[in-house]
Image 1: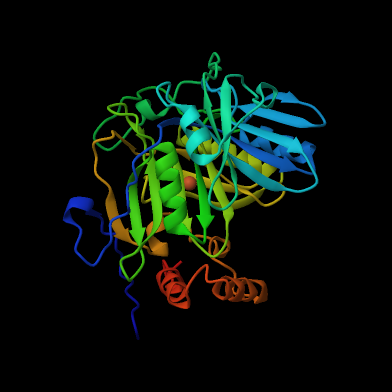
Image 2: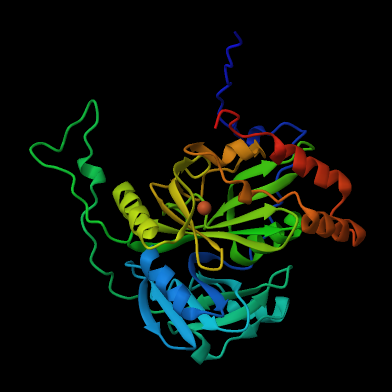
Length: 380
Ligand SMILES: [Fe+2]
């Protein structure tokens, strides 16, 4: 009888100062300014009512809802985390970042051709400019946005977690309410791109981001960057923006912080009961360490609930690891096949088009497929 013994392994990370010559460090262009928060995401939707239902069940707090526009916030101090306008398409329009007070927005106007935004377009006041990233996506940079009073949350149960060597909870039970996982704040957005080098360079320069973890292809070229905000000595999330080299320009997912693991789990029950489409989780990510649970909104866009993520100060140097599908998560169910490009005719046609217009080389496609095709957890 053959006994199958699977090899369990963790991703190996190398800090930038110890990189072997075979791995190319990600270029760090001089920053034009400094982002201090991913403020909100902008959407266009044909059916705002469907989006509103999903947002409520997902745990957003609806600030205003009209037939033309939907605005939502979390329980935190940000006045807005998502805005959707009624339109003729279902699409992610772009992110809006809050910039530090000492960032000079005029520089973006003169050097990058940014346009000032009319005040009535800003859902939460302040001032802002619009830029186009190299893929043509609209990016807003904002300043002087007012903060709002946080909404009440139950106390977290995490501090009262009993472990084998520590039992703070005595003569008490865990009875968290069955309710939507109340979203505290918008945490990060992940963008796929054909031009990884160009997009990473642009976002690092425009937002002054710090790469926390970089993943490279078998030829040593970077292809994925988890980037954090530069908040100096104040800890910042492991990633606020993730740029992923892929075969299309695409919103991949956005992620929202909830109070604790029980909020995440009870929130899953609510979303399941309301008939929403579950995608992946609960599990723990590897790079960033978050406990996660992924959902599809009515049009199939991916949303992530998370809690217990890593945070770093600005003095921690970037780490590098080989790009490997298994490296996406530490434990949990197998990642869904929809996270990889589907092997079908539309994908093949897209690849041929990319090669024809020299957006990607067949060699790079081969490396990408070698990195992602190996089954991540053959026993799942
Ligand atoms: Fe995520």
